[in-house]
Length: 79
Image (tube, rainbow, N blue to C red; front, side, top):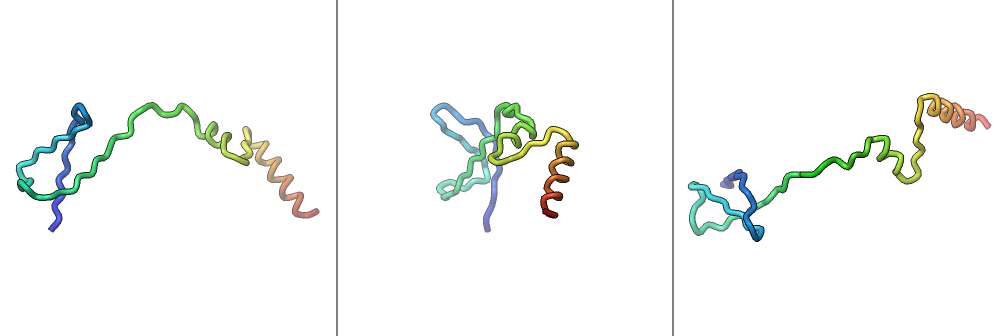
């Protein structure tokens, strides 16, 4: 039966990690998975900034611009 042990620890100098748990049997082979938390500041870009940089994207600044574009597109269907 698989047993999972969740332990939070600090990375030691040299990139070493120490895990201590009295339930771990000595000499047993185990698999260790390390998840690093996401740190850092957000990139400071708003969703509008990100979308404006997308290739081939048209960015509308107002709802009137969207309405005008849609009206023009629908008009082109009738031509």
